[in-house]
Amino acid sequence: MMLKSILLLYMKRRRSEERSFNKMTFTEKVQQPRMILRIFLVLLLLATVIFSVFVWNETRIRTLDADIVKTVTEDDGFLWKVNKIKTERGRRLHFDISGWCVKTGEDQKAVEMHVVLKNERTGEYLIVPTNLSPNEDVAKMLKKKLKQKYDYTYCGFEAVYHKTGKLNFDEDTFDICLLVRFNDMEDSVLINTGEVLHADN
Image 1 (cartoon, rainbow, N blue to C red):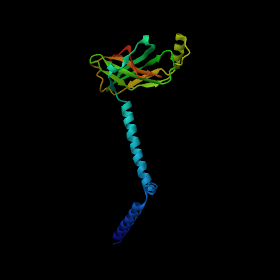
Image 2: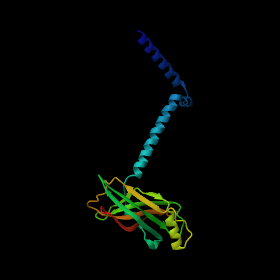
Image 3: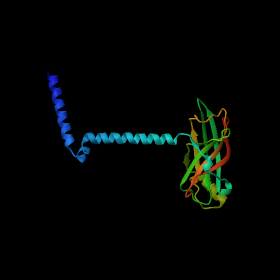
Image 4: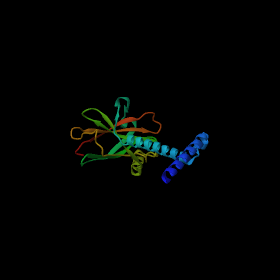
């Protein structure tokens, strides 16, 4: 009997609170602690979803339509070098590619750079997640070699990948390319570095 009375009292109080809540203006409702908590949880969930999509997009291998990208060479003012090509077999084949690339005659300010692997058998171009980094040693070397005062510090790149679902190293060999855009360039351009990635690197 006591439990039933407590339950009825609770239900009555809940209905009273709901009627009071429904009579509130939108601003008053938003200011209520439970509404603040709900809004916070919705925003937190939305932020988590957006971040997850961003991470997924940045860590996946994407296909490049090379027909719409201009290919450039050293004659167009670009210099590059691939310093490291390393593969390691485990349960999957991991690879690590690093080096540097610059557009001569201007400071390296806004830089976008991705390692691109061209499948020699199929002709497919695959964009690999790539990290950029400053390289002061290369910048000093280029200043001395080119006798220029431009800042080439932000020229380093490294692509380390552990998910090789789209890459079959047992059958295929890949040309190592770079998809780059520097400073005020309207479009990215493609560079074939002349280096090759295969299972025996």
